[in-house]
Length: 610
Ligand code: F6R
Image (cartoon, rainbow, N blue to C red; front, side, top):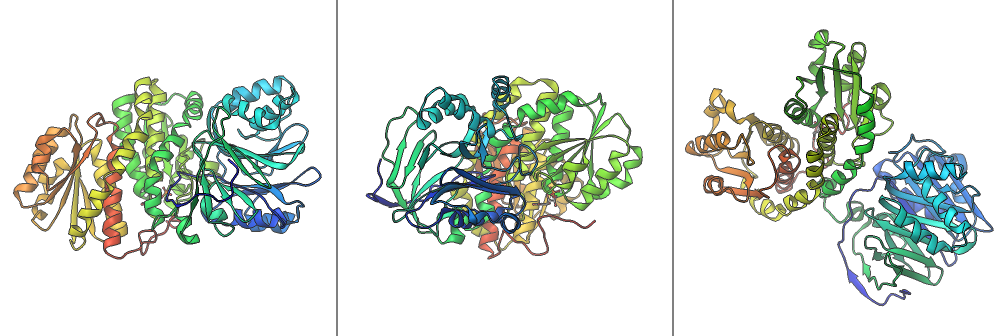
């Protein structure tokens, strides 16, 4: 399709998680490098750790390094690169440390091409081994570099750039949004996407590509959304989009009406709601850690106990870990709030694996506990932020791959922590059935997100209550706790999570018709007894919001409002999915109360004091 701006239509298509950002441009008159630098700067609000630019002008020119964009610019003058076309990358490290070598763009053996990539190449190791055997020389630890060498290999057999790239994207497994420039094709940028976001922009004789609309919105608001497995060829007179078989496609041009700030939030009002919606994609990303987790598990020494240590939302993930490890791995598990760890650390024995769960990897309480635990036992950190303190101090590290989380209240990082815990338990006992079940979670979550309209409708009824109870048993107890914490944090309403069986030991005295109760009642072994608790609180006047299976007619008959889930979601898996409407409930009540859910008062994203 040669674009001349034929079809214009507003669009709100939204993309999933972006852990790195790529941009590219072919400009009519201006130098590319300063524009590319501005474009990547617009992505930096997520917190990146490396940056690089490659331009084409009498050969391929590359400048790149680790560090914040402004630091690297000051050191290298990235915007000095010559030429009117180029590609750029900002990296949030996931494979390989943030170093110059691992920064993008990556090249082939002879520096004939430059390539930027966002995504994960799952089979990179076997491809790399084979390429190395064939004599290719690698300069980084990244999965991305294999793509550059694979293209080089095909072109050395006489293929042109487009055919070579098409063949290579059929060889790689995983997700990608990528763009390539080549010394023999000085007027072309070629790229493709699968499961990672990539859009094209059409200006006035200028053409752009980017991971995300905000990167290029100040250059153009005319955007082409690429479908999965599309490949594009960008030249200085237009863009051709093709499907995976090489057939030319007619992708439309959409006109975006967002302000730059709205665009950073993907068109959503707040980062929190954007991040809630990213969760299916995030879980898919985290599931791709399976091989890394398998390797980690192989290296564990024999241990007889597990102790989870964490704070806040990460502690709720640990609670799920306790139920899961005890049921599935059959091993005794202790749980410690990081701020309380010092009072029980004395009893820690060297046959214990101490697992620290922390999104930031910097929480002071968790770090203090990690220091103490290291003296006595083997430690594993489950962390989102690469290069953070926990990743440097723990014996083993598993990354959650949720991407940067901007909203102060943890949402997508919670489900990614849970996914890691499930993967870890499944790898420890070789439970293939659970691994298969986990693959269905992103789809279950998408259905859970469809409850948004219902939750938006019911939220105004709860905006003026002063207390809220959340109840659940077993695997649903942490979900109840997390629902209550989200509510407290961003609505300033008192929310309390209880193990449903504990109601009768005190809290029941507080139930009345102005205290709503949220009951988490998935099908499974805790179901009937929690149903009993629903009846108990209802008898005392409570309006109960019930979360349960779509087939649960008994539960529905007790519910003031019923939030239904697919019946196939087992109790064991339910924490990953049932939490989604609770995040939405807190979010919409917060909005009803005119609070900015992204920045609740008195709270910080990373708590660095003990
Ligand atoms: C809640 C929340 C906090 C964090 C806690 C631990 O939404 O974000 O409760 O979970 O401060 O933080 P990390 O996981 O960074 O150690």
